[in-house]
Length: 398
Image (cartoon, rainbow, N blue to C red; front, side):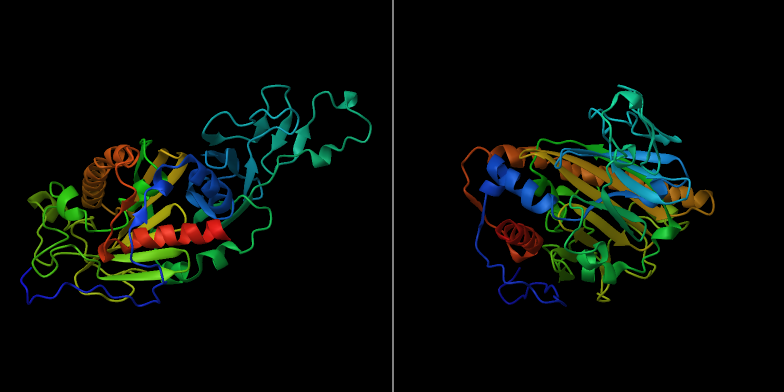
C-alpha cells in the first residue's frame, strides 16, 4: 500500500464495546484452570445449540447429544403427541444410560441394567422390582430427568439451568432479529463434517471468525476471492455486535471468477463461490461486494448465511487443548439434477476450505503451550477475537 493510499474501512452499524486495543494473553488458550472456570461460568450459563428440529422429525425419533463440557449425555426425542423434549440420558435407578445408540426410532427407552422402561414423554412406564422398594417410593417422581430446551427457527438449544435468567429469544436478542427471516425451512442438509483436533476451543473458533487469513490459508481453494488491490487485507465490509454475539460480513473480490466447473454448476443453483441472489436475513447493511455473513452465537455456535445456503459450526470443548468440531452445510432444496450438482460443488469446495483452516490449528496450540509467547498481537481485522475474549472475561467476572 502506498503512502497516500487509505486502508479499506469496515463499517460498524452497532455500538462497538470498549474492549481496549492491547495484546491478548495466551493463558486463556492453554490453562486448565481457566478452562474449568469457562465450564462453570460460561457453558453452564449459556444457551447451547445442539441440533435441528428436522433431525428428530417423527414421533418416536430420538437423537443422543453428548456435551462433554458439561459432562452430560442428552436425549432429544419426539413424543407421540408430536412435542420435542430433552432428557438426561440416565436411568433414575442406578444411573446407567438408557439410550445406547446415537439415534433411532423407539416407543421408549429401556435401561440395559435392570430393565426400567421410560416413554418418549419421560414417564417411567415399567419399574422392575417395584414391590421390593421402600413404602412411599413414588414412581411418578422417577421419570427421566428433563433438560431445559427451546427452539428458534428450527434450531434446538439446551440450557444447563432449570430456570435460565433469560429465555432463548431474549438471549439471542439482536442476532436473532437480524437473521429471523432467512429461509432456513427451504434448505436441506447436504453434508456434515467432524473432527476432534488437539486445540483449545477458542483457538479453533478464532480461525473461523475473521477473513484476514483467507489471503494465505485459502490461496489454493479460493485464490484471489477475498482480497484485491482495493482491499488487500480482506477487511470485513461491516461488523455488528449484539450483546455477547457478533455478526461479520465478508468482502468478495468483484473481479473474482471461480474455476470453470464452478461457473458451470452455478448456472443451475447457488454455490458458495458463485451465488449472488438476495434473500431475507443476509447482508444486513446492504454492503457493496458482500460475500456472506459470519454469525457467531456466544459461546460456541456459528451460523454463516449466504445467498441460497448456510452452514453451521459447533465447537465443543473437551479439555483445555481438545475440541470436538462439527460442520453442517445446508443449501436450497434441489429442484433438478443441476441443483444437485450445485450442492456437490458447495460441499466439496467448503470441505477443501475447512481442511485448509485446520492446517494451522494444532501447530498454533502447540506453540502457545511452549511458553515462548505470553501474549498475541491482533489488529482491527481480527476484532472478533477481541470481542470473544472480552465477553468471556465479562462472564467469568459476573
